Amino acid sequence: MVDNKPENLVELLKLAVQRYKKAEAFKYKQDGKWVAASSEEFYSRVKNVALGLHQLGVSKGDHVALLGETSLLWSLTDYAILSNGAVNIPIYPTQASHQVEYILRESQPRAIFVLQGKQLDRLRSVLERFPDLKVITPEPGDGPFIKYAELESSGAKLNSEKPHLYDEISSQIQPSDLASVIYTSGTTGEPKGVMLTHHNITFNVIQGGLTIRTDENDVALTFLPLSHIFERMVLYLYTHFGTTICYAESIEAVPQNLREVRPTIMTAVPRLFEKIYDKITKTAKAASPVKRKIFNWAMSVGLRWAQLEDRGEPVSPLLELQHKIASHLVFSKWREAVGGRIQRFISGGAALRPDIAYAFWGAGLPIMQGYGLTETSPVISVNTFGANRIGTVGRPLQGIEVKIAEDGEILTKGDHVMLGYYKKPEETASVIVDGWFKTGDIGHVDKDGYITITDRKKDLMKLSSGKYIAPQFLEGLLQRSPYIEQAVVMGNKRKYPVALIVPSFEAIKEFAQSNSIKFDSRSDLYKNSKVVDLIRREVDSLTKDTADYEKIKRIALLDNEFSIDGGELTPTLKVRRRVVEEKYSSLIESLYPREAAAKG
Image 1 (cartoon, rainbow, N blue to C red):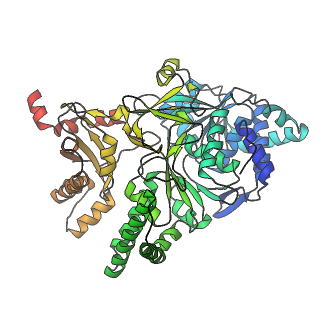
Image 2: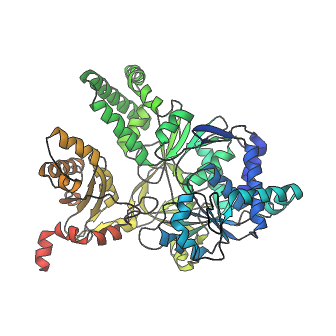
Image 3: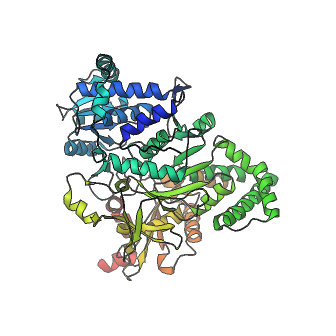
């Protein structure tokens, strides 16, 4: 247990370096091999880059933008910016050019770090519109940019000349100082800048650490975007508690990197667990009848065992024995596929399917589902060892209050709540009332304090009958199908809900081959009556337990996936319903033929 509590994020790093002195504090891939960086080496580089920024004129309160993929360099740069008392403005690498321009115009940074050459090429025309903006990049090419290595070396020179300067500058940081303005992607309009102080984030780090309980013996693999506060806060937490941080090469390389670094803890989003689960079940279906029978038996045993554990009920000696056999025959291979040492996954960002949570728990890979928003630094609640209730997002962290408003909205109060939205006092006043932040989520709290989320308040749809439907809930059901990649439910002010569905091409292609369906293109395949009937059966099966008014009456299959580039998804992969509705308005109208006829 860590006794001393840092008052700001720079002090957090300094104390961690003094406390642990780890030879392998960070690991990353270089030229195909894993390379380790010690905590002292990392801190020395942070000082040099910070002083390099100081020489550029960056001082306390200045804004510095940071655009790059998750890497050691991102973390190092983040601490260097903060060390000057400056404010980090992180920008998603996937952010559309016009949004990057909007963020730069509103936040007015003195400098921007662009950590990958491909991003520099993509945004060159945007950056040229800001002639006074200093652009720092490892690969400047032929542009009027500052080379990262030169900035670092000039800072190293200043550090050798004035060894106390870094401490003098960083010691000026106060807990109430602004640490970051993080632009939320926004599903309806332009991004909003969320202002988080050093205290906001360090409070979340300390309270989150008490709940997650990681330490210097743990090894973590990180791959989620650091431009999002979730993974960024988690990396601060790992640093504070001495956990070794390993940076994945890319999202695509995560399966291989898991086996290489063999982490004990990892944060992820539900989609990753869904992909792992789908791959395992697909492999089982293709196995021999005997192996398939053993797999199905093991899954059944794991489910019964996990459900009893979840409810806190005793497991019989027979079931315990069966679970050990299932673990040896089936689940051991599952665990080896993720490195063989994982003690717990932490999941956030979206709802985790209960069937997947039970399957992983039964396999000895518990997933702790949490909940939070950028505006809450970000964690509000999380499940923990010994208190993991599937289907919920856990109980609030210590020092955090949660209550449910009369209309079902989740409200929260505490030191985790943001300072406000940057340059948007009216919007800030509309979401923070008497210290209570309106999350925009609908949910409830049970008698033991566990929070369950049902939908986003603004996403709730009112049918013409007056009944309300929760589209995210219905979309979650549909996306349990191995044949459905994406689904968006529509129905506001209509007689019934409909769904726009992007089929899983690989799964549908296999179905076509096994059913002798010939096709020339995706569009051709998705128009085939057998494929449409298959998806219709999946929809009906998955929604059979919903109320009649919630049932999906009509569906349309789309050739192209919803994407960030297409504008249908935010950088955090949330659906922009308004964009989808506008883009597919004619198709949606065709799903309501009687209404269209009546209008005609």
